[in-house]
Image (cartoon, rainbow, N blue to C red; front, side, top):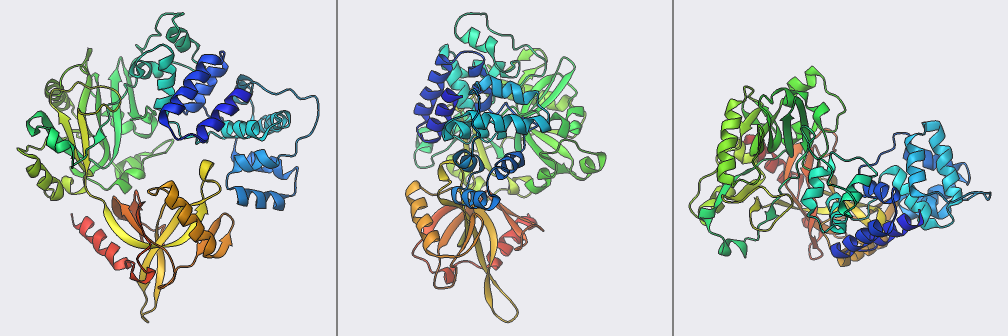
Amino acid sequence: MRAFAELLDRLSLTSSRNAKLTMVRDYLRDTPDPDRGWALAALTGELSFDAVKPAFIRKAVEARMDPQLFAWSYDYVGDLAEAVSLVWPGQPGANREPDLSEVIEGLKSATRAEAQGRIEAWLDALPQARERWALLKLVTGALRVGLSARLAKQAAADLGETPVAEVEELWHALEAPYADLFAWLEGRAEKPSSENPARFRPVMLAQAIDEAVDFAKLDPADYAAEWKWDGIRVQAANEGGVRRLYTRTGDDISRTFPDILDALDDQGVIDGELLVIREGKVAPFADLQQRLNRKAVDAKLMAAYPAAIRAYDLLQDGDDDTRALPLTARRQRLEAFVARQASPRIDLSPMQPFASWAELAALRADPPAGDPQIAEGLMLKRWDAAYVAGRPKGPWFKWKRDPFLVDAVLMYAQRGHGKRSSYYSDYTFGVWTEDAAGQRTLTPVGKAYFGFTDQELLQIDKFVRDNTLERFGPVRSVRAEPHAGLVFEVAFEGLQRSTRHKSGVAMRFPRIHRIRWDKPPGEADEIAVLEQLLAQMEAR
C-alpha cells in the first residue's frame, strides 16, 4: 500500500499532465504483478466494491471517538477519507500492513458485515495518515487525483512504446489485474486477442476551434459540417449475435436502453448521439436524463421517453472495419447502413452545406427551425480524415454556440474535495425576484465549482470567510445585499424547467465566466431574464 499511497499523494499535488504520466508509468514499471494491475484498474475506474459504503467508514470512526468531535473534524477538513485518515484512533496489536492486492481481493470476496471489520483492521495496521487516506479513497472509489482513464492507459502503453489506441482497442477484452497486458507490453508474450463480439472501439474526439486562429488556416472545401446534438455520445454494436451500447468512455449502458438494441438490425458498429426523439423531433436533454443512470427500465418509461440514435459515423460495416477509410467513403456506407434499419430509432445526422466560413458562422448564429434550434453548435470534419482514436489536432473541430450569460449574486459557499478541501470552492448563486409588495429578494438559480483560476479561488475564499453570516456544516451563507456582496458572471448552455429548484428553472453546465468585482449586487439580473430566455427556448 505504501507505493500506491505515495503515487496517489503525488498525483493529487501535481497539475502537470506530463508529470502525472511519468509518475504512473514509473509506478507501473517498478511495481510487481498483481499490485500494478489492480492500481491500473483503480486509476481507470474499473474497480468497485458493492460491500463497501461510505456510511460504514463514518460508523467505524464514530465508534472509536466522540461523534461530535469527528463531525467538527469532518466539517473542517471537508473530505471524508482525509478526515478519517487524520483522526483514526488505531488499536495496537500484531497487525501487518496489507498489500494492495490483499485489500482488493479481500473486499471483492467480503460480505457487507465482513467489509467493515476488514477495513478497520487495515486502518489499524497502516501507520501513516497518507496510507490510510489511500486505502479509503480506493475502497470508496473516489480517487479524485486529476488523472483521466485515458492518461492511465497511456502510461501503460508507454511501457512498451505502444500507441495508446492499441491498448484501448484491447481494453474491454482484458480483466484486472491485466497480467497478459503487461506481459505483452514488456515483450514477454504475444498481444492479447481483442476479437470479442460487439467490443468497444476507442472513439475519435474533436478539438475546440479557435475562431481567431484556425479559420485563417483552414479551407472550407476540405470540411463537412453537421450539428452537434445535445445528448450523449454513444457507440452501438451488433456483432456475432451480441448487441451492446456504450458511452464514449466505454461504459456499457445496454441494460438501460433495450429499445435501442432491438433497433440494430444489421451487423455493424455505429457512432452517434443518444437522444429522446418524439414524432421525429428531438426532445430536451432533461428528457434523456430520465433514462440515464438507471439499472433497469420498464415499458412505461420507454414509451414516455423514446430513445433514439442520430448516427454520425460507421466504424464497422458487416465484417469490414471502416475506420481507416476517409470520411467520404464512411459517410456513403453510413447512409446505406441507416437506410437498411427498419426502426425509426436510428436515423442519420444530416450534413449542412456551406461555401464559406462566414456562411457557416451565420448558420451557427441563427439555426433553422426544428431540431437545429436546440443543437449545441456545429461539428467540422475533414472529408479525407480516417477515424482515429483520441483527439488529434486538425481532423475534427467542435464549434459550440456562444454560452448564455447572466449576472448572479453569490449566496452560499461550500468546501471542495481533494486539493480544494481547505477552500470554499463550490458556489450557489441567485438572481433577484420581486414580490407583490415590491420587495426584492435573492432566489438560488444554480451552482458552479469551476471557471476560475487558482488565484481567483484564493480571492473568493477570502471573501467567503470575511463575509460569512451563518454556517451549516461545511456550507456557509455569505453577505448578499444590494450594496454588499459578490457578483459572478455565470455562463451556461441552456435552461429547463425544474420542480426541484425554488426558482423553477435549472441551468445546463453552469460555470463562473467572470468575477464582477466592479458590479454592486443590486445591479445583478432578475429572474425575469431567465424566464424570458426559457420562454424563447420553449418556443423553438
